[in-house]
Image (cartoon, rainbow, N blue to C red; front, side, top):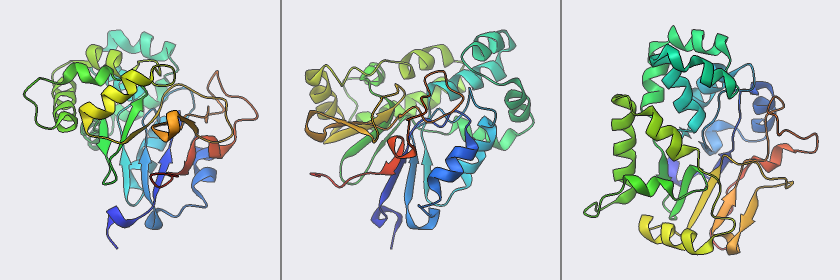
Length: 243
């Protein structure tokens, strides 16, 4: 069985809560699932770097770039940004740990912003079409083009642009026309994202299944965490198309 044949497990914003991540993934052995992390593994919680390493090393995993990873890399490159990063939940010990781990830094720079699965599910960090600002009219594959330009921005001090791009509010919930245009542009049938916490007991589904939010306020250290936020609101199998 190849990786594309494995069922897909989606993991929303972890935000440094490594202990809860261990608990959430216990029913889903890495060898039996293709695990997709939606970004924002760092900040707020005390184990952001640990969460990155765990996600990186889990079998059959893909880790997308979130705005908090961008902010952390920005603070690492430019110390004048450390105050801003700490103001959004950054942990100084995590930054110090990342500074000593050059392979992890390189791995973070290689993360993509978008992933299109074989069933034409598009996976991204935030529920926004802001990524489209990186598409040019002659791009044959917008998803590949966006990922390429994200890598260029990370490599050339473009964190400010990436921060804005990946920090967009979830517009798909209330703007189905923009959702449809985004799906058409990217050649996708539905989109999966996190970034803005929902309050449901399981991933929230909008517009007949064309948009799904897997950020259920997972981290106990996040200001929007609620005691009733179950693990399954952020960590759950991706349902087959049509379910």
